[in-house]
Image (tube, rainbow, N blue to C red; front, side, top):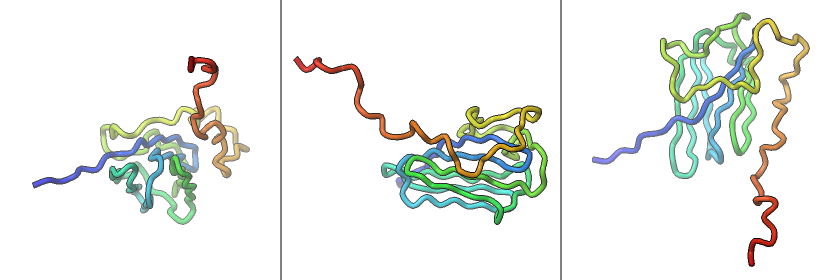
Length: 143
């Protein structure tokens, strides 16, 4: 018999004392479903006819109601509120890091460098994420 295995999307994460910042990269996902439970994060969606999904047991408890998400055609961004403040040092509960999970260095801040007034509300920093456009500087190559 034949069965189709699903793939894992790329998942990037960073943390602050009170929140996890998670980006699920799954361009043009059709009907993405994000599930948040007290100690679990899940995702499923289809992109280009391929099913992507994961279920991740978290390294601590979260406040599901206090968490927010922003879904764009390229990715899903989550601001997951921790139930209790404090750094987890890793997002996953298992001993080994799931291979689809990576640190989001663009959002990473060391504990001792945290700016208490940092605004994470708008999910900014999305400029430059538009289409790739043409290859500039190639004019006159057509002959």
